Image: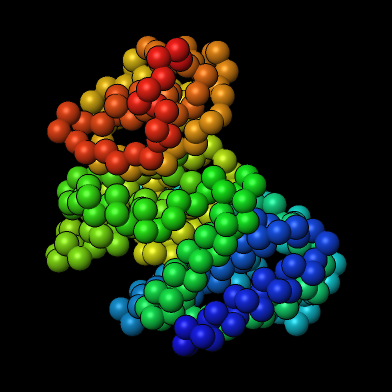
Length: 334
C-alpha cells in the first residue's frame, strides 16, 4: 500500500471520529486510533506467526480467545451500532485489560498494560464501525506498510502536540530528539532510559539509531528486549508511547506507568542505573511536600527534582541528554 493510500485512510478515520459526540480534538481521536490500530496490528502479527507455525508443523498458541480476535468482531456485519459499543465497552476492553502473561516477555502483559488505560470515547457504534472497516485495509504484515504507518503515527502525535493545551507535554519535536540521540550516540549492549517518556520519542529514535548495529541474531534480541526502558505517569501518554514503540518494531516495550518522582533517590542502587538517559521531563509544575522529601535538595519545581533523579540514575561513565529550562542554571532560592 502506498504512503498516499495510508495517509488517506488515517485522514478519513480522523474525519469520521471528529463527528462523534464523544470526541473533542486531536487528543481524543489519536487515543481511539491508537487502540484500534494496535488491535489490527496484533491480529496481523498473530496470523503471520500462526502461518509460520503451520509451515513448521506446529500449533500456534493465540494470545486472545477467538471471540476477541479482530476478524471475529471488528469486521463482522452483524456487530454494529449500540451492539458494537456494548461489546467494546463491556466485553472486549475489560477482557483485554485482564489478560495475564504465562511466561517472561509474554505479549499478554503488554496488551493488558495498554487496555488498562483505555476508555472507548466513541459514542456512535456506526461511526466506530466505519473506522474499523477503513483500518482493516492496512496490512501490518507488510514491512513497507509498517514503516509508513509508524511515520504517519508520529505525525498524529505531532499534530496532537501542536494543538497545544495539555497535549503539548506529550511531544518533543523530532529534529530536537534526533539531534540529542545523535550526540549521545547509544551503542548496542547498553541501556537507554527515559524517566518521563511520554509518547516515547527518545526511545523510538534511539532504536532507529541503534538498529543498524544489530547485525547478529543475538544483537537483535538484546536490542528488542534488554535495551529500552521508560516511565510515564499520564495514562494517555503511556498508551500512546507503548503503541509508538510497537509500531516501530520494539515488540516488548519495558515501560512502566508510574510517577518517577515517587522514588526516594537515596535508595537507588547500581542495578537501577542506566548507560544513557534521554529526557524532556515536565517543567513548570509543582510537586507535593511528601514527594520533595525523596530528594536531597527539596524543591517544588519538577525540573529540579527530575534533574536530581537523572543524576542519581545515570551510571558513572554514562551519558545524558536532557531538555531543561535555562533558569535551572541560575536559580539559587529553590
